Image 1: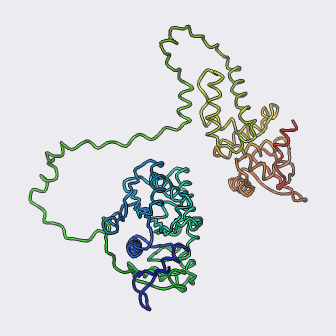
Image 2: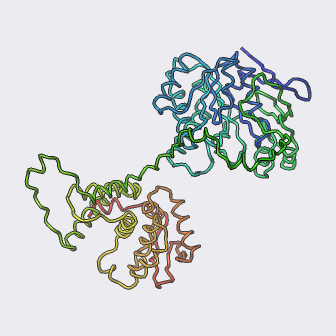
Image 3: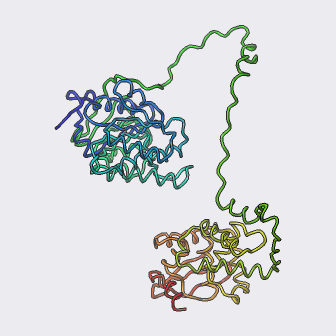
Length: 504
């Protein structure tokens, strides 16, 4: 069944949006703050409410007023992720329109709540894959193009849910309608899946250029987006128009709880204005105290380090039993045990692709299991030891002056790059062939050879190394500070470290 809804006025008459086509092709709305994006979304939701189930991800709580007029269920985002997944699943089962309001949550909590809710809808059983119009306002918050101040886990969860919605949601009946203030802040793989566009007023050159590209317009025509009035958009897509079409969004029946502030004259100042300001109201003393925000959670590595330093309290039964004193270890014996535990961890072939924080937690646990006394090394010291161990330097080379210079230079390199730097330095000091891209990538904890080449370029930009090739095209890395260079090595050679370890 083909259903067309009236979005407003176009140059040739009413602007009609084909809902059935929209469900198959998705929609992207872009416009700066104040351009009328929320008004456009409200018009779309009101006109299509009787035809299709709707789910709105609302970060500001502006669309909860739809519940009074159209019966949308309001879902508060201040719930556990398991609760949100269950609600989302039942929303699909019973085909109820709803508004997930995330008002009052910080940005990271909003991202986690939206991800849980979208994943719950995405993972619904096949028998409940009915058509749903999923509207996400301020989509750049939930699918950012770059990392921000939120944790990497929250960003990945939210971005993954948005990618599923736009890339794989069509077969599950989910039709994404995403609105953003800036295209440059929205992940490209999310924006690229939309086939319908409504572009509003924008001023930044990069956003105007991307909007013109999406609409198939000449870059010189992009200036028109600066001149669009509030509530005016340029439409393109199979559900709207086959050619760029300026439209003016029509009126709406409901209104947002918040609106743009309006200018109004100031009241006449009373004569006793200072008394009004500086004299407290008696009711202020009866107001409850504002609760302070809970302290930030402590990192797991700090907790494990504290547990390693402290001695657990003994129970009454344990207190009655004589405690066996642990033998004191000399500095040499303790260092030998630390080195043995570190070697056990690094001998695991998969350790090269695990983060230092994860390895550090395992290191602390193994120290406790072996009852190694004394305070454990700190995380920065652990990272330093790991970088030196992974370089493969032997005792004779470690005692050389050139290696001491290499260690001093590595102190100026960030923690995540020290392993790569020292591996190259060891090859130069010993005159070994230059490590391949695969070996460099492994030392950095990745499989990407391209990233390995970027690391070499970064070191060369910093003046730490000089990269050149011999007559046969093999790569050589030289260290000007201590006058050593590697032997020629094949940059494209495979990483044979696993094979060497097996042979040994």
